[in-house]
Image (cartoon, rainbow, N blue to C red; front, side):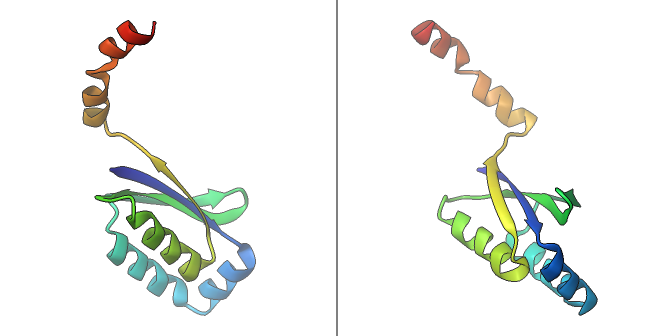
Length: 103
């Protein structure tokens, strides 16, 4: 399942990892471990943050992904299932039957 992981981390702890030079190491480890298909960094509500798109084969992976961000960056983390255009087309294939059944 494709998942969008949105994260932000506090300015105080972020300043510490940036000024110590550890930020590059942390992101290298994160990216190597979770192998995102896309990653974007940007300010999130005045804090450092971003989102990554990953593929999970099992829901048990949620814990491992979140823990990496929590321990590595002291980050706030949300995860949202997302679809690529092909996924949407596949999903829409069954909508007609759902409409007939529930409309």
